[in-house]
Picture 1 (cartoon, rainbow, N blue to C red):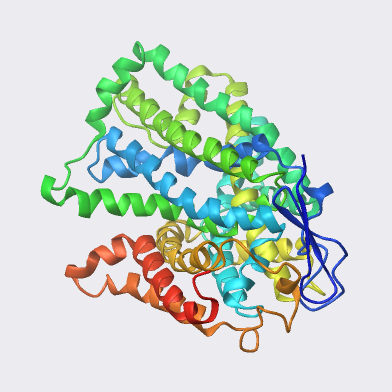
Picture 2 (cartoon, rainbow, N blue to C red):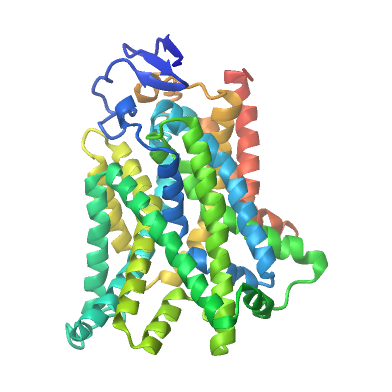
Length: 501
């Protein structure tokens, strides 16, 4: 039986609460803080079920970086078992702020840039929103370049003359076919931006079973060639490099990698309301996210370790990059259809990760800068242009290292927002007030100085770990140190205004 409560909000727009989900009883009046894409979702728009949200996380988790995650950890001196523990633990930790922020998206139907107004102010919300968007645009460029390389390889198999297009012309080391393939994959991404979030939901739902089957098929090939999973895992320990002394292992190796794992999805833990605003219920968003994230990431990382161990047995060398392995299998078989199928799977995996993780957030953030003139579509196109402007083909390695560290610093944003919503406001927001320039979240000319001070303090604490070896743990655990300091300081600064109720 539905439970309905009606309340008055800021201005003329009242709200009704049905089964814990808050909706407006009237459309919001036109204003500088709202457009059709940023307005709260209606009951008709809440179509994402548990399985849609689980599929979203399958689509984002199954990608080349996930496959190679354990490789980096093993290379740092961890065993494959320890790497899987670190991956699961990191995901379990980041799931906590993710579910809390997702709760706001589901309850009030608002995207991340609007939700951030509660803590940072109607103008100050642009700070965390754009901080999130910078890392998204960086990853978008990198993933689009990776997808373009896969398309380039695919077209070279189907049409051998493809690689000769453009003759000897080169720009930053790459020829016309590379840039043409990059542009083609970019256009595919932009199509889904133009088609909207429903198209993203359909893409993720259709791709999820394919991606899981792809991983299982690769694992099955490895087991068949080596005599079974047991033989593979017996060989897996040979991949490990010398570890740090046991007394220092926890602080110098394990904790930094758990932090990196948290940082892997730290950005999504912030803008997850962009998706959960379409969820049918809190149960769907909580169970769907846990089911998709906590199983897929460890599973696909395990497949990466197992298959790489198999290559050590089969070829006498460890082949960590799945694209290199698939290229070798195609050459051995002499069957171009194998290469075509494998590359299509890589393209789909890259697309599902890129669209959900790297396009939606900046599209909404850019739209929030000028809602009356910038729509979700235009915001997504501008984010796409930014992804090209970073020259991902030239700065791939540098950006990856920088972006992982940058993501850890966003723990400060999470600390402020989780403290504000869960501890201070106890999940209660004034929905119409989030769109009112002079409403309860205007603070001082649209800025909440307390939130900004706490944000800077959290980031500064993490960066202080770079100043001396004795406090290096602050940076190695950047997400934790930034989140704890920012959250605690924000609670101290805001409790006089909001109290503990």
